[in-house]
Length: 210
Ligand SMILES: Cc1cc2nc3c(=O)[nH]c(=O)nc-3n(C[C@H](O)[C@H](O)[C@H](O)COP(=O)(O)O)c2cc1C
Image 1: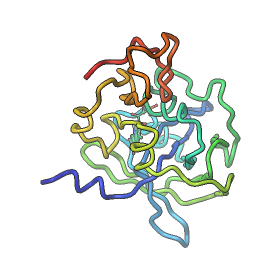
Image 2 (image 1 turned 30 degrees about the vertical axis):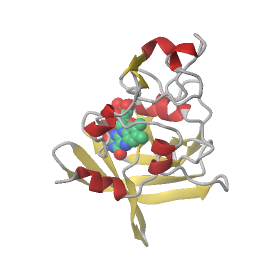
Image 3 (image 1 turned 180 degrees about the vertical axis):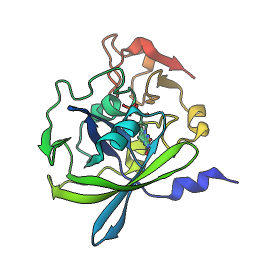
Image 4 (image 1 turned 135 degrees about the vertical axis):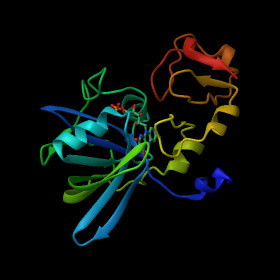
């Protein structure tokens, strides 16, 4: 089987937010798709190890903030490379409440769903949500998964269903936390010591030469 075939599937990059009791939490997902139009339903595939999984299961709600090409890539580091078990991902972040769930205004649109069904796989739960609110926030281009890889130079962690181990092999200098590949004009050795990973904000010292 040539798993590179999966790279020809198209995705976006989304922040899935939900509730941990009263506390907002969530994570990045690319595996979101619209299933039906009337009633409108959306599905998301969530790894069993992600804290967001149990929070969606318990709260019965999730929101999808659709990131744009203009969205701060730091959002992907904040929500995609650390766990809500350990940190409050919404601390110091501007967000707005919609149907009881926080959504990210630095996005091009949002969709809020109540869970109506779920399906288990060996590693992921597919949550099916009926849309209870949705709106367009900004008329900007949505960030595609291809744009995230080619332009933002971001990587996917192992919990993403689209993770491919081959991604690990190509980089010369990469962030030891999020896998971001350094692409500047200046050789990495010569970038200033206060350089920070644009995705997860880690210092220069965590970068590893491959
Ligand atoms: C670009 C990208 C796409 C991702 N897509 C998914 C996904 O579709 N499903 C999933 O379960 N995790 C996905 N992840 C991984 C989770 O965002 C990550 O494991 C996160 O740290 C989980 O946080 P939590 O423990 O607070 O839920 C993705 C991460 C990135 C950076």
